[in-house]
Length: 130
Image 1 (cartoon, rainbow, N blue to C red):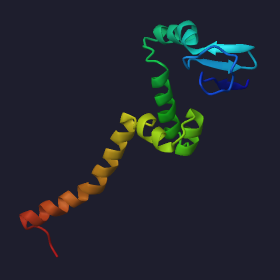
Image 2 (image 1 turned 90 degrees about the horizontal axis):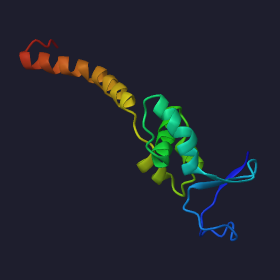
Image 3 (image 1 turned 180 degrees about the vertical axis):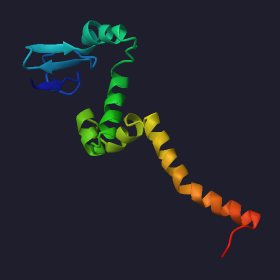
């Protein structure tokens, strides 16, 4: 199914009504998909049934970018998927470091510097042999 996003002032479809950016036009479905309606009818009930709260499309896009990054997808590919003009926008505002990734990074750092701390403590105590 081919989808395209319509922006009211883009000149893509002059006959269409002004669009607030919440519609995606789909050839397969014969018209516009109202994303807010989709969220209300489909996404929010699923979230509610699973004890979660829908935070909106912007949060969805940030989550998508973060998960793609964790899967090893290149930043420029994530930029393309989100249709950002500049990869720095994607990197600065959309790709977030997941807490478990940060924790794992700190664990690795701790392992690397642990032996340094032992050597420094031994030097301070005068127990370091040459």
